[in-house]
Structure formats: structure tokens, C-alpha cells
Image (cartoon, rainbow, N blue to C red; front, side, top):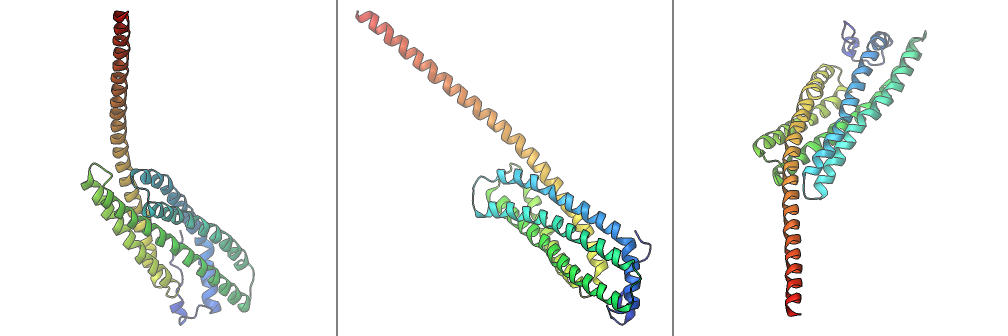
Length: 258
């Protein structure tokens, strides 16, 4: 990553279309873009891993209802949105890097910056959808978990549900900070640190915790299914024995009557 922070527009009287500021900003952008795109790609891939866990989680809730379907759909949309945003940023950064490497005059630099800000505004609000849908999925999962109590160790599962609520609240805070970052450069550092804390620490911890719950729950469900199958087999054997005895008794009665 670059050793220097990005130039701030406040150093140029808050003028985001000052040619000197734009020239310094795009020098920094060309150095930082590969690392930024690599981080975005990792986040996009990591969020896609939620989909399988959510499919397994959905099966744990017995009642088929709006909340269960809405939870799984919210997680799915929230996991896919960052991939769409990454592809859009990939195109914008590639074109911006190519254009900024040319010998542009002041008017060309201003045009490049205006186009970049317009593209960035779409990315900011598109990325914000990820926080909306992921938090919605977290809130609905907590509601379903506490209402249906699908896991045997509900003290452990209840703590996981409350941790999910905390993750959802932080996601909403990041949403507002991310939108505010578009208008105030000084919020960029806070957003970057908050996003790293949420995406690298909190959400992986929630997902690993969920995996532990699902593994324990699946083991319990397997044991219960084997027990039920044994009961069914024993019942079928008893019914077959009763029918056989009835047929033998009927045959003996017929022989005696003859």
C-alpha cells in the first residue's frame, strides 16, 4: 500500500476540482488502486461464502413463513451486491488510471475528476445496500432463533443471536459513515477502520460461531433421525410379527374346524 495518506481537499480550501489537488489525488490513486481492488475482491468472495451457511441455517427453522424466506433472501442479496460493486469499480478504476496517466491539461483533469465522482457516488450507494440487506438478515435470524429456539443449547445460540444484532447495528453505522465519507474526506479513515473491524473481525466471528451451532445442531438432528428410524423399524417389525401370528392362528383355526 502507499506509504502516504491520500491528499485531502481541505488542504486546497475544500475545492475538489482544484487541478493541483486532482493531480496529487490521481498520483495517489494509481498507486493505491491495485490494493483497494484486491481488498474488495477478498470481501466479495468472503461474503459469497455466507450463502451456503444461510441455506443450512434456513433448514433449522421448522416453520415456513415470511420471516424465514425474507432472512435467506436478504443474506443472498447482501452477499451478491459487493460483487456487482466490485465489477463496476474494476471498470471505473481501470479507465480512470488510463486517463490520468495521459498528459491532461487543467480542464481535462477537472472533467476526469467530475466523472470519477459521479462513478464513485454510484458505488457508495450500491455498497451501502450490502449493509442494509446483511443487517436485515442478521436481525431476522436473531428473531427466528429466539422465537423458535431450534438449537438444544439455546444459551449458546441466544448469545450468537445477540451478537448478530450487534453486527447489524454496526453495519447501519457504517452505512451512514460511508455515505458521509462521500461529502467529507475526513470521514474516510473512520470508515476504513470501522469496515475492517466489521468485515474482518465481527462477521467472520459470527460466521464461525454459526458453523459451530450448525455442526452441533446437525449432529443432534442425525442422532434424532437414527433414533426415529429405529423406532419405525421396531414398529414395522412388531406389526409384521402380529400379522404373521394372526395368519398362523387363522390357519390353525381353519385346520381344526375341518
